Length: 506
Image (cartoon, rainbow, N blue to C red; front, side):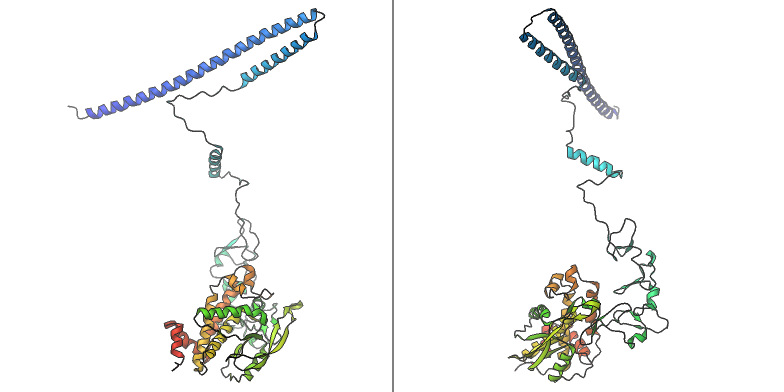
């Protein structure tokens, strides 16, 4: 027996099946062609018959017309009938002509011939669109959303395609991304090593020898640098009367005007954007700090005044309170326990011409209370973040006095108060803009963040700067107190630390 006989039979069977399929397809095509030929013949015969009838009618018409000319006295009724016949004849001629030029009607396909359903209009348009898109020949339709052009990270205007420098994912005009010292563009290969801060952007080599105050290269080998802002400046600017911002401690650069408050303090324009200027304006922040303490299970239940004052009024209140400030720390807030007359800023100043502040109003009032705390006083004109940190510090003093803790160790008391101010600043790193806006007045000095919908770069840095000031304070009471108490809170909790440092009541 042939071992390949079975496989040969299978091949023959498959070949036979394929042959039958081909015969069926050829038969179907033949039937279809036969129908098409038959239909074409029918149309040809119809056209010939119509042409013959049209010829006969034309002859009849001509004969009738000649008889009409020979006959006289034909009635008007016969004339009308002739016109109707001629009109009918002309319509039939037009119909035959249209029939001759129109395409034949589609034949019904044989049942054995497969056919796909016709594409609808939307599907056809999609296929055409994708085919053109693959060839790069598309034009945006009216309904297509065209992506907006990129905007420059410097001037915020639109950038033409291909005309930008990518700086960590943000496009810039080449002329906008230039060095603040030498004024030359910062090349693409220098982006990774360039220096960027609130003063501008710099080549690294330029920044290392660039005084941001006089805006020139430092001509001597020795120069000063701010420990937090890292800005380099000539040592002479420490003693030559260059204004220093009382909030961020930065010196005034050349061609930049700081604002002088009525009590002699200088304020840079960036800190001025979020400065809290009067007693009415600070009240929403006052309520926010009380809510902050309530959330820490340290409720301050008693009501007392919270006033913004000038530097002279704060120093006077400190003297009357008999507070012995021997720690070399600038006083920016105080918690009062004695009744006294305080002059507060009832209406904050507004920026006038030549960047002069005008229109400030003060009024005197006696602070009294039926509790151990009569008022909290804070310097006016400080940014919201610094004002809130000082307020949290003083509010902790108020909490301790209201709960009878009047004779605490000075280092521990100031330390726990510094910790509360530091904790509040930490919450501001993640606070949404609408919360910050709610705790600021709608006046012209309210936070610039609320206007833009996001924190400015300076406001983000100010949070870190004020925390840095607390953390690096070198005073024996405030600095050492914070580090000691903060270590305790970090290793346990605020409530456990309070139980440890507060005297137990017998």
